[in-house]
Length: 278
Image (cartoon, rainbow, N blue to C red; front, top):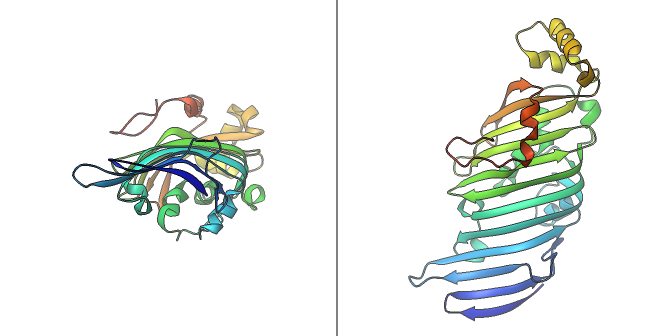
């Protein structure tokens, strides 16, 4: 690891941070990563990190930091601009403000324990292997080795103890697609999220029947298969709201085949009050 250290009246500045930290490439573009350790005129200390980082297998990186291997990737990049109170080593997600965006290719979500700790517990809500498990339908034939994806991207903003998906999470795989938007309160660990899950149906008609709700299972499967015969041959999209807590998320089905909503991945997200999309 290397850097160029400069001092000023307001603190210490680590410019051109470079090297490799436990599998994280600290600057994918030369000179892009800088760390500032600041102190204002009243003695209040804060830190700021800006950078463009890269990883190979994210699973290996997580293990090197002592976390579970909850996701594997071939390659990934993330950009961040975060600031937080205190010295650099006092970083905490809930106290941070700023932006974080990411993009990963050729990966797999692995089922993780509900007992994850620290920052990883917050991000477990984005683990689609755990989300599918909570849908309570039988996709073991498709996802028994995890949920594979060709690409994953998204953007987060942090402010006032809230994490918002400023650019919706979009996970595109060979047999599924997931899109998520909304807000997580980092103080209470309560999510207010919306998920579009596009999953293979094929012979899995009981899932489709359950989605139409209120109709007898056989009748529901028959109606949906006739009205949406072409889509039924391959995929079916359903919209869920996610609430509860990070440890025990609650998924509530809202509607099926919401074509207008599926396009939200490239749309801006409303700021709080009521989180959502437009």
